[in-house]
Image (cartoon, rainbow, N blue to C red; front, top):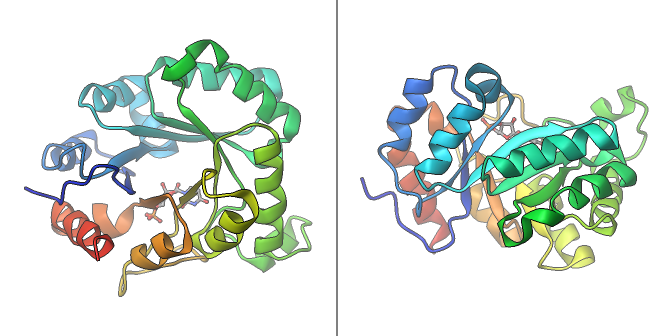
Length: 237
Ligand SMILES: O=c1ccn([C@@H]2O[C@H](COP(=O)(O)O)[C@@H](O)[C@H]2O)c(=O)[nH]1
């Protein structure tokens, strides 16, 4: 199926499947130029690095979304192990701090042009002000995102995970080259589920998002490849 082939696909499909066959069935219907793919804690815990390699071998750009958050030495080693898998992008939590992020970045030095993009999670898109207050952060999500994104840039990373609601603010303050990777994307009419800071695909691109992470609206659809094609179409206008 033609899912609208684009030179630099913006959509990153979150493959949050408990069933490897279901994920591969979807992947077999799409082309690497129609989207990038992401695996996170669910599929990596079920199926491990071998599954990640299968996706890389099929020539898809793979975002390994394991959100490392540990001491600098441990995170640096985990990021280097991710690079060994040949992934396109990998991430850590910005709240792990500057020394952790710098160690993660340094661990990629020896990979040269083959190093994956390294980005950091700011404030999860499932969180709103009340969630932050309950963990002792008494500023708005926007303010906390801004602080963590600046720290991420100062630590030498390539970009952040944030919500599209913060994209315009970050694009202005940190520049257009700094990658903004935005989950919490919901086409009109789709269920928000546990997400709180959401936007539609077209609005997110207009706000300055570089990559749109989209999971359930695609993967739980009756025809995931068709929904992907419709989303790509909505981005072409
Ligand atoms: O702040 C974050 C960071 C990561 N995610 C991940 O993105 C997808 C979103 O899936 P949907 O089904 O479209 O909600 C999922 O894999 C999350 O782990 C995020 O949502 N927010």
